[in-house]
Length: 375
Image (cartoon, rainbow, N blue to C red):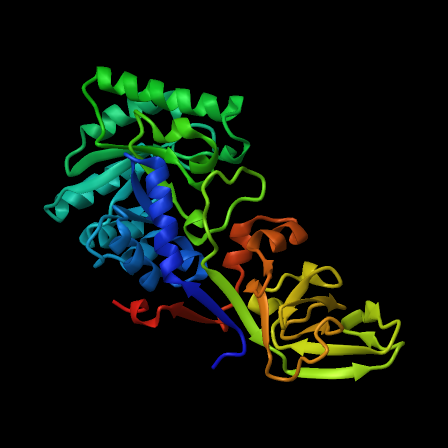
């Protein structure tokens, strides 16, 4: 068994999905499973979410999409596609983004060659500045793309860069621009079965993003009970995550002992000191050095000195009976205490996505209940 384990509660995952679906009803929900479901494990997460009612799955690129192609629901590539990725993506039946005229022409040509019709969604850059058809010339581009053989323009979507601010002027302007675009295209007889712009931040902060004309939302981080620290948390969601380790050493060290690389902490009194076999290679932020804590025996135990790659040293003064092999909770509940993903994000000066995606590959992912971990 791994010294560090990430436990993922699939029952809580189902519960979170149900609460999100209720919040955005009657919109459907696309579950976004980018980057191996944010590092939690795509396959077991996908099976549970489809069973819970996810209409579609979203991923970042074609390789991620190919891993999910047999799940029985549409798989959306939400980013751009490279020319060399188009043929295998079409062969696998993935739903592709239309981001510009040139890539649309390549998709059309390959679809005709494979004697098939590709379902596609037009990605509109309404203010993100990253990918997609600039909204200023989107009408003309989409008119041209709609005329291409082998492409069914099933949907249109855009993305918010600042939805955690709520319905501020920038986000409201994005919404209006996309609404105007949909109206202009409808005047040309071009309509879309699916219209989506809301991400997790918008589901919590921008209710207009999941009302008409929009009929689908894309949710990622909220599925796991984590939030962007800058926005509101308008849905009651629970964390699915517990990051757990154990004590590998428990020693009483004298006053004056310097702890860790750089000797950044010096004991001022004789202290019971523990060592946890988990470090920044496992996802513990370096920023926890002399600044964070873990839970042992239900007690808060501060980090002493610098977090290293494989080990973290802690003060066991609050847990004097702790011994080698005792449970250590790095993220999650223990008795009456809790450490949240958002707590680490604030200490590190980052967001929850970074914390979850940084949990290392050598950390064993465990799913409860175990029977749901495989199809």
